[in-house]
Amino acid sequence: MFGASVARSRAFARRLLPALVALLATAACQVRTAVTVDVDDDGSGTVEVAAGLDAEALAQLPDLDDDGDADADDLAALVRTHDLEQAGWTVSEPEAHDDLTWVRITKPFGTPEEADAVLAELTGPDGALLDLHVTRRDPFGRTQFGFVGTADLSGGLEAFGDQGLAAALDGEPLGEDAAAIEARTGQPLADTFTFAVTAELPGTRHTWSPKLGDPSLAMEADGTVYHWPAVALALLAAACVIGLVALVVWRSARAVAGRGRV
Image (cartoon, rainbow, N blue to C red):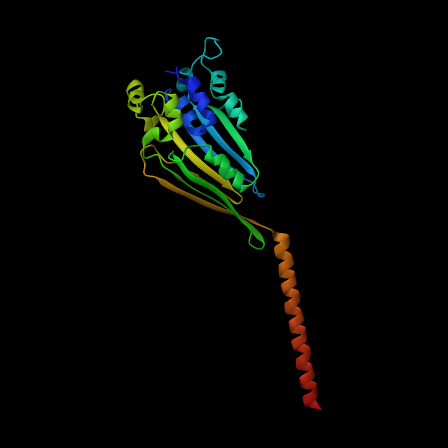
């Protein structure tokens, strides 16, 4: 089942998400995958890919540390690769939450442009996540952030495969035919695999949860940071100008009235 795990791990250097899905897909049972783009007020932030497995799926992982059990340590070892770390990703220690064991893989970015480069590492140009971008605009008194992209799971779980990964896995996008996985587990993959994309922008948070086989889903979210000191100064300046104009008008009116009395 996991004979191609080394090839899958090496594929991390090319595309993170297809490799992660390929590593975990054959476990089936209950697997959740989540991508979170977290943008701070200054435009920096992190991209996180998290995978959660239930106890049954965890038990089907290879016993990489030869301790007699497939457990969270084996999950961490399976995804913690030299190539992944060389590419700037950090793998957290597995943690239990909501009856699942989660492993989280994160990479920071300093600007929206850097965020785009990190997001491009998730899937290939024909993968499940397309045209992911973080944007920033700075009109007066505020900074506007945006997130756009497309999630296309219409091809089922194999939408997460890519050519490089398939070449490493003898032509199979995920290392095993999706129908074979369903036949072995007795469950449709759409019932065992869930996927979510979350954009956490300043002032807003939005999550999309496309399902395997669904039509492509356009994702778009906007958030705004207001720079209140600049706004307050602008309002004060405007009030001063209005007050000055009013004073000039009032004095002019008094002068005209005084000449009228003479």
